[in-house]
Image 1 (cartoon, one colour):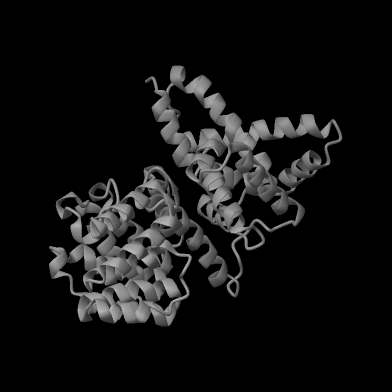
Image 2 (cartoon, helix red, strand yellow):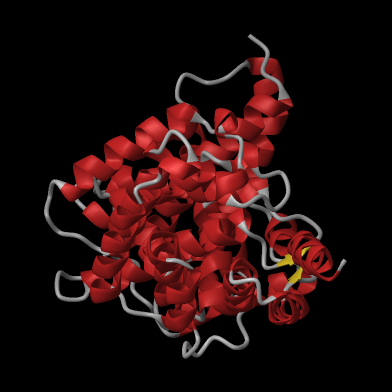
Length: 400
């Protein structure tokens, strides 16, 4: 049975991270692992269209990649390449043990090691675990391809030179390290859901990839409630994607366009994670989104529940941004004057959303000139064209 290029691409996206994880453990090098897996998929493109899909595509890729890695290392070792000699020796001394699940966890924690910058963590995770090309990652974060290439090379070089261990952290270190992994996945999602710059508000590819990584984390760590909370949060927010092709406020969205299957899955995850009685930031944020998703209309939203959940979130993870979002909920319960009093002293003057929220409160209080000035300030602080157009339209409506 012949196989198309699209089918091979689907296998690549599914199996790339797993294969790199297995090969990285075998050879102790991300560079060797990545190059070998790339070579294996090149071979797949050559053989599979004529020969058909093998019974175990993942096994075929790993076996082919391992063979190609050993061949390449032997050639390079003969030229006195110290790194090649070391990788070949490592492969000979480390026989394959442990399930692929453990390899993938090791790879995730290695990519998100605190010694790497947040930008490097995101890029390396998308490249090694997600299988995105350097060009795709550069495009997603609006940086030149050479810049992203250098970022990836430096990150892998730091892992190699600093001898960062390829392992899951020990129990005392696990909570802090897990937070970094969850933060990387959520950063990918937030950039996809509301792009920080560029012409489009939403980047579908990043939203989809973040949800895929979230599912992988839940699969790898089924007993970790915050992993389930993060996946629930992303599903409940992403379910509204079709209702906001441009910036559309939650209250104005057509709820008939919301993805009910994603919402049902997200609600189930929220209930399951909160039953463990270990509330964390992602679970509480997911619970807030669950309240919105469960309301038949915007007018029927039980805002007092939202305020109560934000109170818990502030206790667990206090930040000015959480306080800002809580003020929006308070304004729905007690009026815009109460919300304005809560935000006025927040240290968020360089944050576009802060000024947009103040503008909305001022507009509802009929302080039109002040509201227009706040919309203008918010517009000047965003680099996203869709968001800027929305804010400018709000300002123009006040000054017309």
